[in-house]
Image 1: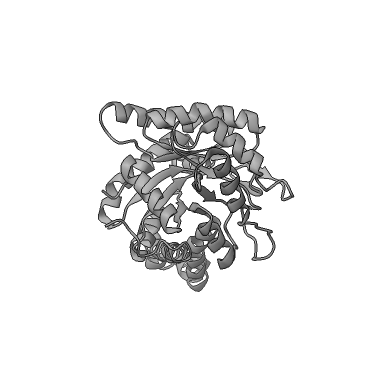
Image 2 (image 1 turned 90 degrees about the horizontal axis):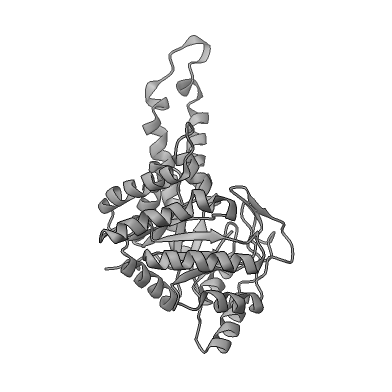
Length: 340
């Protein structure tokens, strides 16, 4: 059962919450980056999450038609087959989806899974993300209520982002300023609108200074201790200890201490994209520089087929990205904790 059933996915998240660790959620854009993520998880003996953004799905759909649903469904179906060769369990997830792409991405993908569940099968994806951070919180939560109901009916978990993450990802951008911090009031309004599990399970991407992109440690002011305040504020009002399952967005460049504090305060999923993109590309660049006259037909020569064969540099790319995934598993304390 390498692709988690709805029941197993819930178990994975419960184990992470209780054990104060998180699953790396690795963005993929191809069959090769998928294999790199799976390999990294397997080498770390960690379960994990594979995710596809709108831009990644559009790329997977091919540059001729650029259809996001086709790209996402195709890779998910591929993952259901090839993941069987890895001795770990993974969940499939779709990353940031803003309001203007819901009808072309998340809503039809939920319908795909709803049709599968109606036939007695498991959903194709185990969770989807609604990114309403560019909307007012009132509108964000109203759409969240609609999507949560549909997701729950299809045995899918919803991820919601209620306040902005700084930087830019797939065309969604926010300034890096003092608004990148979720308040207790924001969290209470979320619990009032979406419930605390009784209306369907959801993951909460709260903001504590998170920024997408490449930043050195110290350049972004993260306050992961804020998550403890959100848990306490909502927990006190609703009589539930540690009510939220948090997601850590924009983690590139985070210190070990910041990650540790986030895990202690309820983070069960941390997204990795920027770092794994670099880890995939860096070995390819190194290979091309070292074999310049082999990968190019310089001065009318024929080059060296073995150097420009995509399998040659592709294997290096896969290994580089897989290594970065194993590092993430170690940092997030999920290494060695796969389901038995």
